[in-house]
Amino acid sequence: MKWLWTSLAVVVFSTFATAQQIKINGRLVTDSGEPVGNTTVRVEGESAHTDSNGRFNLLMPSKLREGARVTIVVEKKNWVINQPLDGEWNLTATDPQTLDVIITPWGAKALWTPARIEKELKLKSEAIELDVYIEELARKYGSTQQVTKEACEKWAATQNNNANALKDQGRSVDGPEAVRLLGDAVSAYRLALLVFTRESMPLEWATTQHNLGFALQEQGARSKAPEATRLLAEAVAAYRLALTIRTREQLPRQWATTQNDLGNALQGQGTRVDGAEAVRLLSEAADAYGQALLFFTREYAPLDWSMTQHNLGSALHERGTRTDGPDALRLLGEAIAAYRQALIVRTREQLPALWAVTQNNLGNALQAQATRTKDSQATHLLDEAVTAYRQALLVFTREQRPQMWAMTKHNLGSALQEQGARSQEPDGKRLFGEAVSAYNEALLVWTREQRPQLWAMAQNNLARAYFNLNEMLFKTGSFDESEREISSVLSDVRVGTRIKIPLLAIEIASLIALKRSAEVPARMKNLIDLMETQPPDFKVQWSFKGVERFVGQSQQLEKKDWLLRFLGAMEGENRDAILKEVKILNPPLTQIPE
Image (cartoon, rainbow, N blue to C red; front, side, top):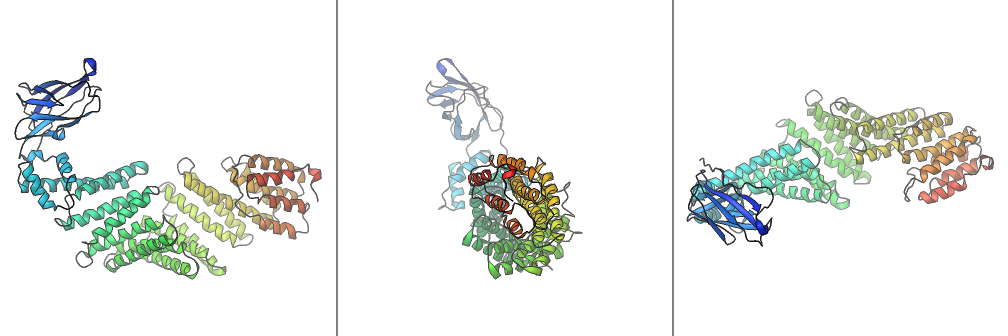
């Protein structure tokens, strides 16, 4: 059934007349564009008659100012003002504004504009059933119940279609624009649900609830706390409502799809909270994925099965990292198993991008398990993690997927650093060096301007890798190599001050070990200058205990007492505490004790 309303022109221009009165010049037309003559138009007690072309002129009372809300009344029996809706309009005194004042016969299909339907449906009480309310609307406007119902359902379908388009647009962009588009999608789905009720249209209601949950989830994933937490909670609520209709018995595929997406929303919630609440939410997420896998089998729905296995692995991994002891190892082991299951279907040949994502996540789970394990098993797990990251990098290239490439490079750097910490020379030196290279590559994409939080994280881990590398060189007696390595880092303008400070301390120790004490005062001055640029709560993030132990046990090193005091001073509780001790230890070279 088709119906049409036309927005041809009642053109209303508003300007300031004398004494700051707003003058209105307008024209009244029907929904088919015909002028309406010899009709009284009233606004705020002022009235005028339209001429044969529908034109009228009104001078507003001087008390009315720009922005005032007024109501236009057209004295024509059994006609309704469709635009502006029911005659409600805000006065303007800026440049002339065009206003389409359109009237429609009482009972006509054309009166059911989107604006009128939305206005009337928003006034509906939850206690009144939709069919009863539609019957009331039909009587109110002289329409039939069938015409009114069809108009509302057509409007709701349009809202739903608009929401789907907005959701897809929002997922294709980043930043505030994505959040805005997804928010618009959420609003449109909520409008559709004014007509798609559980009682009158249960299947459409359930589908729209699912889609609403998905849009809220995507919006929440792109938002910051506490807004993200609120949106994800609303997504969970929408999915649970959908599942009251989408049951395993009646709609098994839709049920499984909603269970999987419910798991995603619960996992999103769980990663944003701490403690017992996080464990509870992540457990519920894993349960939801387990439910989905009752329908999504490898044989019947291999792609959905592998997707849900990947998601299950992610939930188990997140829960494992929030658990201690044997339970943590068990959960991480189950996460690894789930990722490996997903990779049976997610192959590099068939699904390269998804294969790479799962390889990266597998690497993360293996690395997390390794950090909770000792000896040879940890070494084996880290080897597997490094292999998984390198596999992912076969697909995630800097040219085609720069953000994923940077993330995987960073993760690779962390695994290499963990390997280095468990290795002796020369493997430790090589592994720390490879970790430094991986972090530096990630920082080519994660810049301070574009990704400040990721940049800060990578900078911190890079600093740790530099420190570990040079600590190992020092402790193995490679003083000359350590000094050269640190000198190169210190001359790099890209390297932050927080990295340079602990490295300067090791360089000073290396210079003393090399019997080049004449160069120490200059380095001490550099160290003090850098320290004075730091905030009051500055503290070196890494321990010098390993270096101190080596110095204490060495039989060849000179000026050991001074050096041990210096290294101890670098572990002060804040900037001023460190500076106080370092300045005391900064006498002329000849005064540095042997």
